Image (cartoon, rainbow, N blue to C red; front, side, top):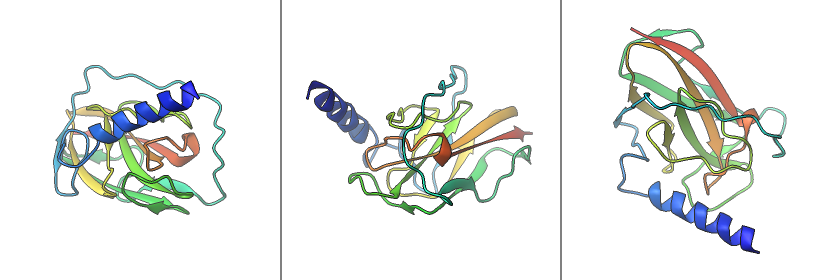
Length: 164
């Protein structure tokens, strides 16, 4: 019971930090996000216990691995086999996107952090623009449920882009 309360409190905190009116953690499709990549980290892989059905995946609509781009970078996010919906309810096969800059996927069952490198799209957005410094960057698309709980590595996609 204590664990459930702790998880609920953590999820509520994330929901509040990703709620409406906070551009630092939610991004409208027309907003430009400035990303500070000076303190990046990678998430270590854990056992992925979330059931993902055949054909369910996320993908970058307009970007390819190894592509050279200019900043700001337009990012269009897609998903197969699940439905994009705003935060709030936890519904089977539904959730929303997160864009992770210069870090790896979020292990299944883990709440996605809300910071300058983990951009939440809790209103159900499917595109954004991000300002990135020149050089190589990884972009990880991560799908999570209505409480920001990650669906894990199988609902993530990481690519590398070169910003000129």
